[in-house]
Amino acid sequence: MLESDEAARRLGVKVTTLYAYVSRGLLTSHRAPSGRRSLFAADDVERLARHSRQGKTVETRMATVTTGVTQLTDEGPVYGGRRATDLALGATFEEVALRLWAGPDAAGTEPEPDERPEPGAWEALDLGPPPEVSASDRMRWVVVMAGARDRLRADLRRQVVTAKAARVAASMVDALTRPGPAATARSEVALVLPDGRERPGALAARLTARLSPEPDPPLVRMVNAALVLMADHELATSTMAVRVAASTRADLYDVLLAGLGTIAGPLHGGASQQVTTLLDGARRHGVERAVNDSLRWQGVLPGFGHSVYKHGDARCTMLLALFEQSAPPEDVELVRDLVRLAADHDIPPPNVDLALASMAWATGMPPDAGRTLFTVARVAGWTAHYLEELEERPLRYRARAVYATPGRSGVAGPRSVPS
Image (cartoon, rainbow, N blue to C red; front, side, top):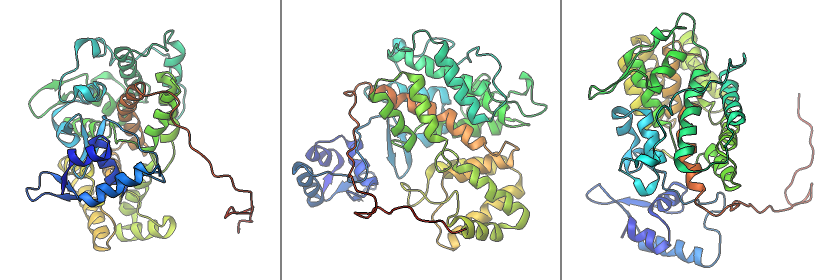
């Protein structure tokens, strides 16, 4: 059996890529007797190495991209050598963003002064009053307006890019509509970390005041934890869109728009909103009927199952624990009943979309609050991948198509759709 470093060396890849092969089913990892390391069968590694050396495609469905931003493990994402679940309780979202932006060479260290965003970077830009549109459209409006007003948007130095990203994230939050009577600055509650540090102007506190009519310290901590946990997730669909745009050397604003366009799909950033519908149905008609209706009309249970975390999403576990500490008892019990019913019928474990939706649903946030939180958080990860992609050769993404004449080679022609 080979340890991770040796297996990666024989394949000629980084350890992060080795675990990407595992997540995509190309390799199988085995836990060492100590339980602290992963081991790989030498025959499996050599077979994959020969397959690669023969010029065949190692991954037939998806390109493999080497990255040092985030590693996916059974315990959830790892940012710069630290588990996101640990950072979610002990660091602010801003601190985690700096960790991601520092780059793989600085993993585990504080960024150098000239690599940090300049003072005031987390302050919102003065873009004027936002249009009366949905939260998702307001955030896209922020990126368009920020880019239009940036006279040096082609400046791609790391500290400049990170300062712009910080301002965009803050401006997204500032552009959201405050809910009802919480329209004054007094509604903001400071973020207090477990070690006693107080952050009254933290982005999590400002975002909570924009989403919840009654923000309180436990909810601010939960929102901060969610921002940290959702900051990056390796090569998710929207992140791939960002990297493709970055490979053309697009500026930060256009790259963020590429990510925003992809995250707008209901199967990516909007997944938690489908869970909110499920929770509403469970509150009105009971858990069993809501689950049965969801399976009947959608064929799946939203908020359950994950392509990477086959045995449970650690991000969900953490957020649900925080949810249970602050949500009304009846809502906590309803979510527990939902999880138990799914487990009893061999439905895959819950994912982070269930936790995001539960948090929003139980605290009076809008139904699209999960998507909003997901979008603000992912600005950090997108920016980190953007900076990393700038170090690669440009225009490296070029898929080859297999041309097929319509009606031949398995390509179906037009067909009528039953009414």
